[in-house]
Picture 1 (cartoon, rainbow over the protein chains, first blue to last red):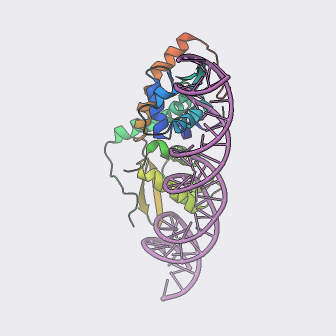
Picture 2: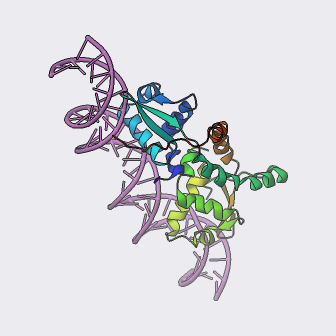
Picture 3: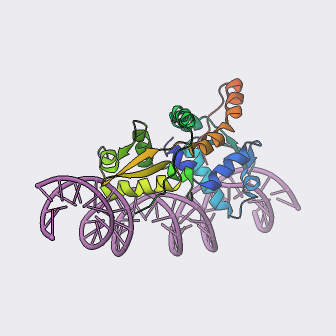
Length: 104
Length: 104
DNA sequence: AAAATAGTTAAGCATTTACTTAAGTATTTG
DNA sequence: CAAATACTTAAGTAAATGCTTAACTATTTT
């Protein structure tokens, strides 16, 4: 299970594919339908999702059925959760001044 | 606040910088210290983090103090949370067969 | 005012990424 | 068995990414 999960979910198309798979397992063609993109492109995205374990595949006839496996998202959840204490802290502090990203 | 937050946290160096900032606000040089990378590289990463709002900066003398602002991580948390129902569902189903990513 | 410090901005470069089209592999159907 | 279907794999490409070094800006120190 190589590949980085943060990298895997960085691409909006890949996130949309995962979102789609929440409606249930689906063959590639059906999955690809809403995207303005070639089938190979989707196939490649699925490969990447598979490599980090976010999807699994199985064959049914000439179709490949892809299924969601959200378990690797735990790593993301865990990482984000480290910042929740901070969130509260900020909430308690109330509003603060927003600084720009590049003021000379 | 342009830029994609999923993209921003996709890079391991950037995540490490954020992790570091949990210990408190810091000037660039101090932040950069543990990384085997030039100062401009860190500065560029900070720029990207700033653009998605994950850090804010302020000047103190000739230093730029960077501070963590975890609020934008809420978007990530929200997205991931959509998959928690799924997690439970899988847990209840128990173990299932792991398929490979490329079996012919 | 000159030199040092802290950092950014600019320019260039190698790699990776996200596609594309074309060709190949299974499987099923006529 | 030939044609169609559902993909994947391969090869190529343009654009984005993550660095580098060199030059610039702002502030402080001497």
